[in-house]
Length: 506
Image (tube, rainbow, N blue to C red):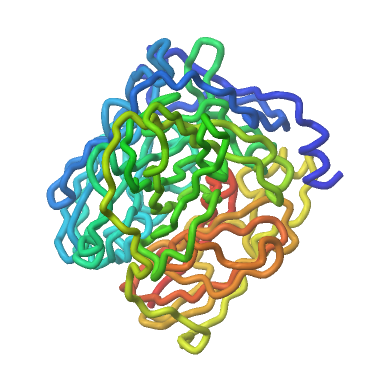
């Protein structure tokens, strides 16, 4: 029986272990024993009542910031406190903000009773300033990160990824946004203010019958991904936000460990879709707006920057953001649709802002810019039997036939070179989203599947999605210093079970 068949044939429910808040806080990082089953759960997402006020994430200066990774008790679904991790007193952490060209100093203290670290997703930061997956901060330890941010304005992220613990630590709540500003973006005078700008982080969680959050993927979920029946936005369930009848800036980050979101907006009065105008992706603005679209497909770790025109929407109208059904996502991704959050148009304001056609000036890379190696990374993975998965859950995923091995350098890259990396999922049965540490890249081509690059992919990226049957070619400048870095699958159940490699810049 091949991998796809046995997963489909054994879809029968979900089993994992949850603990009480007291037991969780008393534990010293000892993981519960999770029974071995091959079911994949959490696909369905019931609609929440949307009665919780929207939670605007606090913004702290990155020039001098202190983060503490804590074990917390927090009310996440409005019923009772549950255990979680966080860089605050709940899940997730503050948004760290800095102006391009300025130095940052960020200290991290680890109080989660297990080893962790800190990775700055999307920033071109040398090894040592942004942890690779083998850099460790033990429980009770601390580390300070000092570097200068030389990247363009954009919505970046910070989160842990220590070896094979990233899925658990991010699912339980560790992570935050890193916001960079610059003069180019400021000159566009983009919408700002509480009623005209919203930044959201989407995560799916699993709760047991006692409303305790838990994380415990079985081998089937290590293969397909760990999905939660409860979607949180900025750490709250079922939020609504009041907005005005103007053009609204909406920035979205997918911080789930596996789930892909196909996000769209619907006017509940007319039933009509409200389009997005794409202005940016992972690492800042795209060159031109390129027109409006009705849905944006975001893999774990991807971000998008959009403008939404609410000027013709009547006061009192409710608008639902939902994740729509999509095709090509394998056996589990995109098979159901569900609601994420609600906007309520409650203020009538005149709009004098015009969405610009031209947004940013940067060099578009071509194959002629490649000065170094071409690397073909086969991320399709072969079929694996149930017996093989049961005996080898830590190494069930591979890149070009090789699983992650701590201490092994898989590729050597010449500092200053520009390489061509080909992520090949053409024979795959599941989606893959790949992230390269320390660099930004541009997508050259997508072959198979969707067949082209999307509007939010036409700028600088750090994460790229390949649906089954797709192969994507990227141009990657290695402007970083010498040291060890990683390439990982952002489906964290995949990376935690082997789908990541180490490369060294020399």
